[in-house]
Length: 558
Image (cartoon, rainbow, N blue to C red; front, side, top):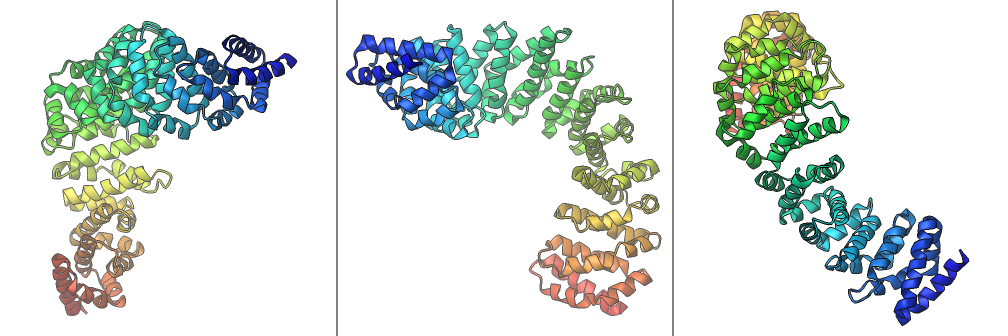
């Protein structure tokens, strides 16, 4: 290592004098020393203060710039050397060298920048601000025959694409075109894997999604799926998953999704449909997720339901009832839920037997499946009185809902269960449904729901409770009392933060409760008149009118 100290001393002198031959010799010695013991050599380089001189050796005119960049790349493999490299002002001259025509210079410069900025979002953001993205995309296009340079660009893209600030810059280049061109040429699994690692974060951006679709990525992905679907080699299974996942991701953008749907006539849409009946779980999953993504607007949903998608999804669910694949169950239910949103689809889906197919999963213990099951049923019964009544009288379902209303660990399942309980009453307006819910112990949950932090849920609860009070007050009376409904209504009316519709529906409910002796007494004891009379001057006309009516009712009944 003594010779290393000599080399560093000599390098200090020659770097200033610019005696080319001895300079090259010194740099070669350093590279050799780094190859033998990188950490120790790096420590000596740092101690010698030579890093500061490197900036002057990185000029476009310098004949040894590739070797200097190589040395920087090697020392920056050590975490403790990265900040000293930044402090020595090496980033700016390195970025300038990315404009070089020399492939060796480009390769070593890319490595140096990559290693210095490794794992540092702030340094990577600095590179983005210095405009390296368009430069690197251009390099990829020019040097696509050079495997090492291509790999360097891909690694850089993979790191930079993780940063949100990079997406806009990437979107303004022809990265999509270059990556798809490169992808088509790759035969090796590892190389394709590298491109996938860049495509996945980039495809999170909607503008880039569309560019990738226009550049023909989807056709490449469909081809991969076709090639790999029957293989049991691990690499092929991985590639099938990555390819089909990426396909689903491209469908998350509204424009890219519509472009691929092509009014339901698109070849891509047709191919995706053929995945659903396949025997490959990964393809079933991707197919169902893709349908859920295509089902993001009413026109697409109506077209798909008219063309038999519901039967395909129900067959798929049927294959996964007993010990089924949870992700496939979740995806197929997501698709059905979305398809049930347009009013015109509800009756068609109900008569196709979707409710029965969905209810088979009532015994599932998996919260994601429970959540989607509840959402699908809630969508299906919206304004469908007969279906709501049929489900609301299903004791097994109602008991399970009441149980899930207490799923404290799963807020989503808890919220959806409450909303479905309320929906069964609101859409059926049926005494039998109310009796079933009372007998299963559901009333207390509807009362709690009236205190939810979400106005929409509060409202749904109050409307359902008003229907209970109007249709089956005698049956529900005791439960409403023990759930402290009257006190809650008093609180909602007295709270200035309550939304106008909450105040309105709370007063409607108060009037409905007057038919019960015990609840009437509670209303009298709580001095509701004071709260209600204040609301007569409320800025919302409906609230003010309802306050007058409620005040009259309270005065007459007192």
